[in-house]
Each structure stands twice: as structure tokens, then as C-alpha cells.
Image 1 (cartoon, one colour):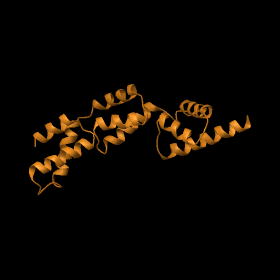
Image 2 (cartoon, rainbow, N blue to C red):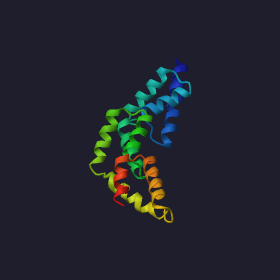
Image 3 (tube, rainbow, N blue to C red):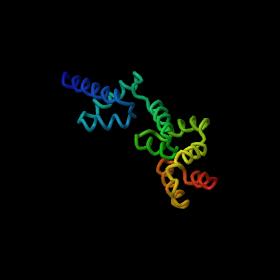
Image 4 (tube, one colour):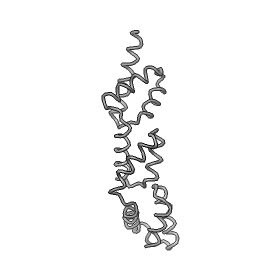
Length: 154
């Protein structure tokens, strides 16, 4: 029994160390604890404790992740993909993105990026500049339709 308690304490200490650097999703934390060879029972007890004390909350994690990634700025498509990779449930992702969409206009963000990047593309042939801009915006996670429409309005 004493061995199990020390494992729980070590798992909790490791979890707090990870959470000190940045928020984590429940899935990320479980994986990191598993990689440190903690047993399923110890991992479950650690996660349960952290959720009870509100140190681990996938809703809050998704909200914070979206907020930080929109400042980059990244498109909602890429943010959705990143959250899925972090193990966030689809319902949580859609709920949090739905809340953000009320005050977020992807087209405005794309137009702002185009204006900022136009100086970097000066001197290039117009078609080449458009291709570069299109590829850049797609890599940032904006939808192809929105990107094409914004570039066409140039």
C-alpha cells in the first residue's frame, strides 16, 4: 500500500510539473503519465484528483487553446485539427468554436493577413504572389473557399 501511495504522489508531482508549463488536455496528461510507466490505477486516481480540483478541464483547455491560436492568427479549421490531436472531444471543440464564431470573422482576418503579407510579395509576378499567399493561408488553417474569395477581391 505504501508503494502505491508514493506512486500516486510521484504521478501527481509530475502532473503538476507538466501543468506548470502550460495547460494540458486530459488525454495529453494521461499519455504523458503512461509514458512515465505509471499504472492505469495511478493515472486514473491522478486525473480524477486533478479534475476534482479543477486543474484539469478540457472545456477550459479548449477555450484557452482557441484564444491563443486565434492571436497567431490561425484559421478555425487548423485549430479544430489541433484540438482533435490533443484528444479533446468533438462536442467540446464544436461548443467552444461556436462561442468564438459569434465575434470572429475569418474573412476579415484573411484580408488583414493579405495586407500584411503584400509587402513581402512586392516585385513578384502577380500569379506567383497569389500562389504563395494562397499556400500560406491554407497552411494557417483557413478554408480554401474563404482564401480564394479574399484573394479574388484583391
